[in-house]
Length: 119
Image 1 (cartoon, rainbow, N blue to C red):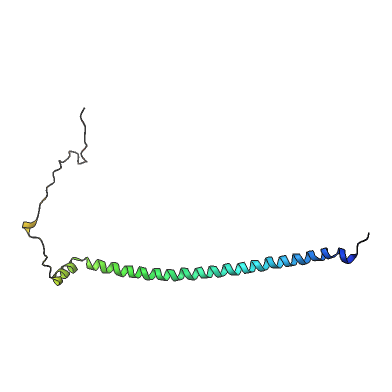
Image 2: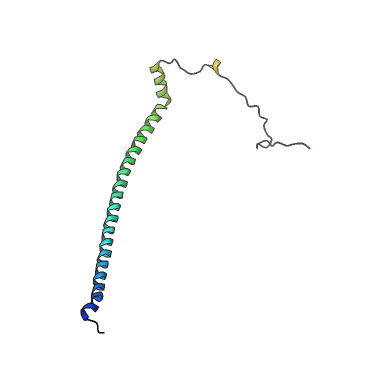
């Protein structure tokens, strides 16, 4: 039985169309994926630059606070603050001093003493 040309060629004509559609979907999907990745990279770059700006502000405030703390620890500033608050604090009198003596035995060679157990 001879086949009719019209019926036999339907499957053959469909294959190139399916290949073309598949190729278009593949190229289109790759393009969309590329654009989405580029957009994500751009957004992450913006977030990084924004957070770096916040970090610089925090570092600047930290430096200001460290300088302020150093100024508050100065002996002149502490004495001024004691006078301002009228706390009545002052240097210790010699009668209030406690002298401590060193009770360690000096070693002969200047090195640390060794502990020796007897037999």
